[in-house]
Length: 188
Image (cartoon, rainbow, N blue to C red; front, top):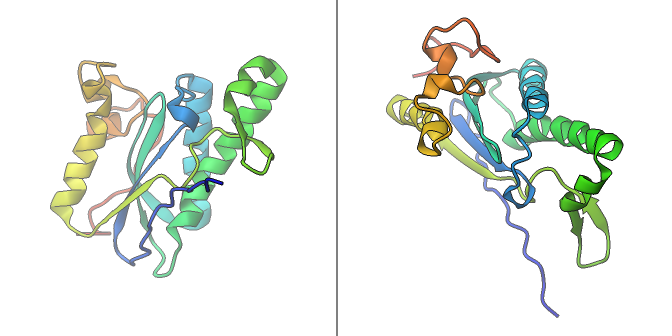
């Protein structure tokens, strides 16, 4: 009988490191293509950063995945708790919305386990991707990479045209979905 293998993310809770977290929607479906859902993610980011005391240095919300760069202000932390605090509220809100407004679509999120249990998933199984850095040059390369994600995909002509990213904040624009925490003085 084949065994299922669940991909696990390796996270290193190294004090002082920045983390680039990437996680995808279930089956890479474009579940983040509605402003409503993107706002749920922005709210989760804001609430989690206050509760778990971390800085948000950059993000981009793509239609089927998310990149976010965070830095814990605490000397002892668990990045898995930050990741969970970002993902769980969005999943709960999305599944509740679909149960009420689009139960037929909900079937696309059905995930039957080998033991017969059925779960409905918003996010891909596993933790996603976590990349640590303690190098300022690498951090700025990561930020540039995630800001250019919508451009590479052909969604916009330049990073600041995508409102679901921190690129607008770094360009000094007033109309931003989420304010970033200052990097200078904290790190690097």
